Length: 275
Figure 1 (cartoon, rainbow, N blue to C red):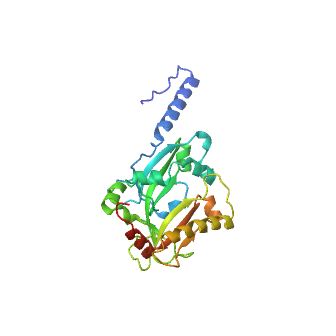
Figure 2: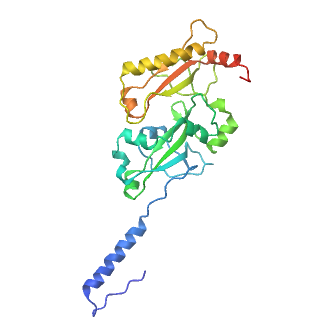
Figure 3: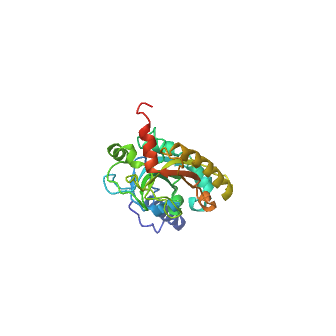
């Protein structure tokens, strides 16, 4: 817009108002709110984002190296307030649609029953994005291998189709313990333990029951599964992992059950293909 010099014969207050209005309009046009994220958009960020509320990285082409792909988006009410100041329970409640069923459906494996190495990360606007008017929440599909997220150069569904569903089974490299619960492909039946169940023990807003209660519930679940996948052994082996109070507050509320991969393979091989 071309600005005219104020006339010496015109009223000074009117000229001042015109300049202020133009200045405000220019500022507003210079900082437009960014568009909400889209389903199918890809991002490249590290696993540390799992413990964060937001990620400011921009989207990348899904043919470039990336670690995440958005599979669900939602909107937040203005009353939600800046996500960085919201409680973990409020953020969990805003992303309840991002469950295992929704994730597996997006990944073209809707009938999968075993836990997998695919995880869901819920992300919210940064403080700056919120101040600019962005009111979205999104959930990304990420593939975890060991202590890192897997770099992909294709869309998640294409990778699943090319790799086969069983490639994403969740195994630990050896017998689980407090420090050895990381997810790896199930390639070594002599050492790997496979996760055969991951069951939520409580939803958003629920209080931590107590260590003794979550342990008791997990042990009951895993011991039953251990007998099912005992590979014909009289002394079935199993391992249970239950949430801590801190993990519960952060949304990690699963009871996880693992058995030796060799036992699991024997039981699966014994089931007829038509069953």
